[in-house]
Image: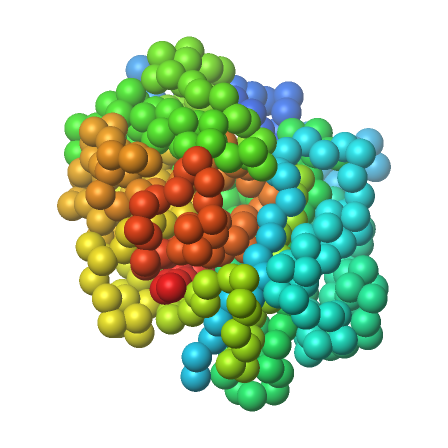
Length: 101
Length: 382
């Protein structure tokens, strides 16, 4: 599968900066225990739909979480993190994840 | 225009390691043709429903590839709409008859999945999701798990009640000699199976499968002395946002609501007129929500009605998934939408053997792609 063209990553990441440090609340969450190939070494990990302060919904992985953070209404903030595991020759991919505050 | 089904055939579903995609396609098409009492030279075009061949097998151009197995050089098309590829291929085939371009066409659904590891399949299936969902590290079980969480909280439904969907479909699968899993399971067994994405467990999820199914449809007035005439009285499609999180509701699929409303209107029937249906139960939660979106159960009652036996063979009112559904019969994604048509055709012809729904006259198929981004509804009458 062709997924990691540097040009494609650059194009996708153009708007990432504008997404950093935005607050929202967990609307729904689940724990992913059987992930796709490039997320294998992170499992299990929670993924949440987050209601942002501007009213839009986003979906993202939770990071730096404790068990008690996994609840609806928990406040989170978007942070920039290394996204997944790349091959040795690939460009490292950074994207938004959500951290409980 | 009257559109009727002639031959209909599904291969066995399962881990068919010794069978190639070409051989699967040939088995399905040859048998559908044979049942139609037609020669390949009487088929005007081939429509192929498939999702993953390009991603997993590096094989595109499926129309031209598989028409070789039919042994004639006729126009051939591959149609893709994730797990609804089969239903969408049939919809396009019907439109070609309505347009008058062709008179008699073959529709084939096919998928070969078990050559690959679960994480490769999980990645490949996420091609049906959005970039945002992939970057969030979610999976299809993950997206449906989010719906299950929302559904259970909103309607106070338990994991055991959801598990009863899989239990019912495995019970049905025990009567289907072509099903991937022909053994019963229990609610306790579902509850004890490995977690995939909370609250969904392994036995809430449909399997990875190989399989193919084919139907021949015609706008001609061909009477087949052996087979009872089955008409397709509605074929409707609707779409929704690709991502779940951009929708207003996580407990209903608006594409299913819209496509089924249009289909009931075209067929001139109400939801309660349906005798038998094949539901796209990719996960237990999918069937619970589908029975509500299709109007069989009230909001929040879908899973509980299934747990009470209202969708079960020999005792329910509207029987759902007599084939065993995706859960027990198997889910070779591109083949599923056509297998559903094969099952309903057999039911309406009274040829479904031990799993026959007595006196079935009106049947429905519900085929969904992605997390509800596309829904295809067909209604069949005998």
